[in-house]
Structures are given as structure tokens and as C-alpha cells.
Image 1: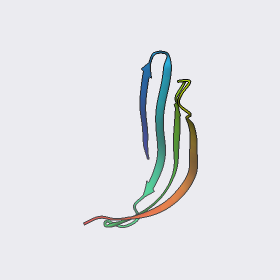
Image 2 (image 1 turned 120 degrees about the vertical axis):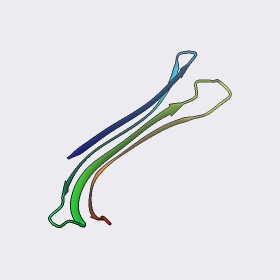
Image 3 (image 1 turned 90 degrees about the vertical axis):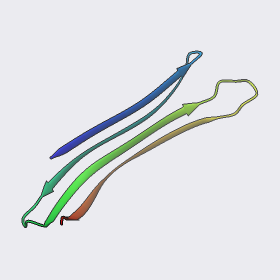
Length: 73
């Protein structure tokens, strides 16, 4: 089992921007060189511009499961 959390945050003049990523995965290795696993990933991005001349704001939220196989040598 593995778990990972990444967080990047930037604030300038009370305008905050952030990028967050997190994942949890499970790996089962029934053979010496082959493994099977499943995981869940999430990516959250929140950006913005509060200037009167600029337009901008991005909200992105990606979450979902995945299945994978590994080969070790």
C-alpha cells in the first residue's frame, strides 16, 4: 500500500493559487517479477486573477480510479 500527497500553494497580495495532488494505491505481487494493482488519484487546481484588466479563473478537479500492472526486472 502506498499513499502520496503533494501540495503547492502561492499567495501574492491576498490572491491565493493552489495545486493539490493525492493518490493512494494498492499493489499485490503474486509473482517475483509481476504485480497487479489498483489506485485512486485526485488532482485539484484552483487559479485566479483578481485584476480589473485581466480575466481568469480556472477550477479543475480530476478524480478517479485506475488499474495497473507492473513488471520488475
